[in-house]
Structure formats: C-alpha cells, structure tokens
Amino acid sequence: MTITVEFRKSGRTVDWSGNGSLLEFAESNGLQPAFSCREGVCGTCKTALFGGAVRYFETPLDEPEPGNVLLCCSRPAESVVLDL
Amino acid sequence: MFLKNAWYVAAWDHEVSCALTGTTILGEEVVLFRKTDGTVAALENACPHRKLPLSMGRLKGDDVECGYHGLTFDCAGACIKAPGAARIPPAAKVRAYPVEERYGLVWIWMGDAAKADPSAIVPVANWGDPAWGVNRGESMVVECNYLYVTDNLLDPSHVAWVHQTSFGTAACEDAPLETTVEPTGVTVARWMMDSPPAPFYAPFLPFSGNCDRKQQYEVRYPAQAIIKAIFVPAGTGGEGRSLHGDAFVMDSYNFMTPIDENRTRYFWFQMRNVAPADEKISEQFAVSVRDAFAEDRVILQAVHWGMANKRSPNLDLHIDKGPLHFRRGIAKLIAAEQAPEVALVAE
Ligand code: FES
Ligand code: FES
Ligand SMILES: [Fe+2]
Image 1 (cartoon, rainbow over the protein chains, first blue to last red):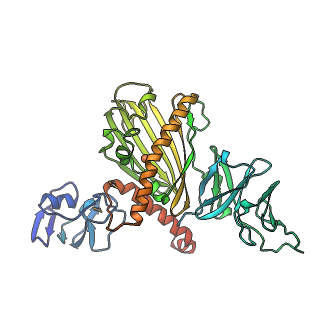
Image 2 (tube, helix red, strand yellow):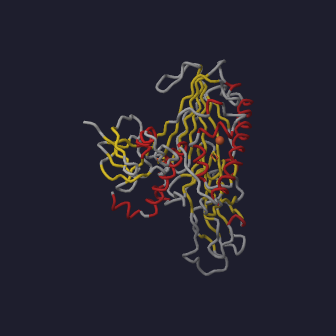
Image 3 (tube, rainbow over the protein chains, first blue to last red):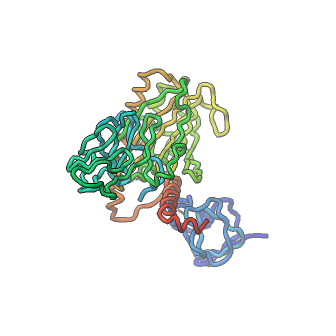
C-alpha cells in the first residue's frame, strides 16, 4: 500500500519514497520548512499534522503537542497531511 | 537550581587542613576543616547567633568556636558551649554535611544526610592500578553556570575550534556523533578514522603514523564528566573491536561544583595507560590540560554573559543534542527532588 504525503498549503500530494526524514522529503520536493538542529531537540521544524500518523526514528527531546509533528526526526507511519 | 541529594567535590584533599576554610557550594556557605583524627568535617558556615561565618572563628580540637561571642559547636554541629548563658539554647546548632575523601578529593553531600551513600561517588576505573599513571589535576573557578560546563563536556565538536593547538585536528570538525541518553546521564561518542594525532597527544603515542581516535564524552548527574580518549594505529580502531596492544588511553575526570548559579568550581585529573610512574610526563600533561581548560574558561564565561544578555534569540544545532538531553535530565531530577510527594504519587 502506498503511503502519501499531502503538503496542504502547497496543494500537492506525493507518494512517500524517502528513507530519511519528512524534513528531507519535503526539501527534496522543493519545500523549505524551518529547521535548526535536525536532531529533534530544538523544535524549530514543528509542523501541524492534519491527518495520519508519523513514527519517530529519533526520540525528540520534547514530544510536540498532539496534532503537531517534528519533521526532522520522523517519517510517515501511514499517509499524512501536513501544514506545509 | 541544583540537585541536592548528590555528592559534589568540595576541595582537593591538600586544600583542607586544620585551618577553618570557608567555601560556597550550591549557594550554601560551608566551612571545612580537618579533625584531630585527620578526617574532614563540614559545617554550615554561619553561627546561629548573628550569622558570623564560623570560618572567622577558631578551631579548638575538633570543635569550632565562634569568633564573636564564643558559641562553640562540635563537628556534628551541636552547640556544646554558650559562654555566660545558663543553658545552651536548643536552637543553637548548625548543619553538618556528610563528607568522604576519595581519589585525593573531598566529597560533600549537599542533601538529606540520611540519604548519603558513599558508594554513589562516581567510580574511577583503574585507580590504584600501578599500570596507570595519574595526571594530578587542580581546580579553577569559571564564572558561568555549571550547565555551560556540562554543555561543553558533552560537545566534542568544540575541540576543533577552541583547542586548535592542543586536542583538536581537522578530523574533529565533522565526524558524526552518537548520543546515548541513560538514567545516569548522557554520553556522546565518535570514532575518527585514519587521521594525524592531535598535537597534545602525539608525543605520548606508543606508535607512529596516523591513528584511529575515539572521543567518548560522558556526563553523569549532577555534573561529573568522564572523557575517554583512545588512540590506536590507523586501521585497528572502531566500535566493538578490541583495543590494539599499542592503544593509548586517557580517561579524564572532570567534576563540577556549582558555587552558585553564576560560578562553577571545576576539578579535574586524568588516568593514562602509558608511562605510569613518569612524574615528568604527569607534569607535562598537567600543564597542557591546564592550558586547554583555560581556553574553555574564556569561552564559557563569555557564553554565560552572552546568553544572559542576549538581544536576539539563540539557536540550537545538531551538536546540542547531548547537552540538551542532559539539561532536560537534570531538570527532571531537580523537579522530582523538590516535589517528592508528587513523584511518589506518580510512581
Ligand atoms: S529541526 Fe530541531 S527539532 Fe527538528
Ligand atoms: S558556533 Fe557555537 S557559539 Fe558560535
Ligand atoms: Fe574544551
């Protein structure tokens, strides 16, 4: 089953094909989400998640509030809708 | 804020004699002295009458006589003499702190005395082993919060910029770091393969040519760092491989004692597996380490000032992962200690 990533603000939906982070995936699709540490500690890449779920491959220093994800240390667990 | 139920280094053993010595630890005034049996005692450094520091009084045997009106306290902090008073007031006492001497250092327990367990003092591997030499260290005061020092000691990357003439090499600039978060603290480590040895270590390596180098920076709560430096001939290093026979190992022990929120007393020594009995080498290391730590000191004091006076936000980088996890860990321990009831309910 394909996992899709919807960048809602940009109005685009792409099949997930990354093996890195959602942040890298968004960047490889031409988006420029905010970031600083890229290690799950600073919270800069926090983005609203409108649908779906992610899996953290790196435990963030602080779990973002429900409905938000840290892009730099997660990848989709199922199809996701992001505020990007 | 500080973790109280923990051992901190109060002084080097040679800094405590039978003279009353005042010091400040975690914002608390403490007086240290050696008793007639040679062991160290630590009392609150304030007479309960008019709060004159007891360190301004006199040591009478194992008792401390206040220099103002002569209230006298034994080394457990009980008042044993109140000159001219019919009876000793029950409130006339000072706090006594548990003290232990180990590794040439005087350790003090700043929390609940009933919880003081000497076995919780950080273990020093190979201590007393004749195959290991000790670079006897010293101490210095750094005008910064102690967490800037723990940040620094979980940050191998700074070596390339702060210690260019000593510990650093170009290889230190971008080898990736592995961070491990444990209940006891945080460890940041990396191997840097096949590079020239750093100038500080080069003269001591028992082999020539390039090396594989491991940096392992562990900081335990509340503020005790064990920094391992390993150098092996190039091509023989790497995680999980047994150490080459010519391996050079230096374990650096760094103990930070907050004086208060803005000042830290920093104690250190190193254990090395080469030339154990060579006093000259011990001395050479001691000098080089002191010079390197002076380089850190300049930076950390300026960082403390800069962060306290920032006019625009600062940012966190990937290299801050270890330091920030450590800060989070110590903050949780302090919060749990200050609200023990809450912690109990949560368990
Ligand atoms: S960029 Fe720092 S948490 Fe993602
Ligand atoms: S690069 Fe770290 S303070 Fe400037
Ligand atoms: Fe340093």
